[in-house]
Image: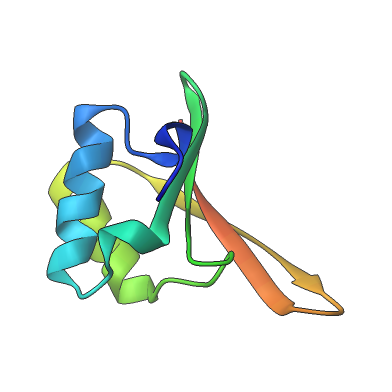
Length: 85
């Protein structure tokens, strides 16, 4: 069971879940975090989402989404997606 604070909390976040679902990404693998205007989402355990899937979301929401990524010596490349202002 997913914690409530990891669920989408705004209409645009619910739309992101719908759009990524249309691209084959399951809702239970997406986590939304942050406060008010500083929100971000991740997929699985900080796994990347295909660039074309992020572009699809941007096209249909009008949002700019930045990928924030880093390399962890134990887990490899990890990332999350932040709503750009």
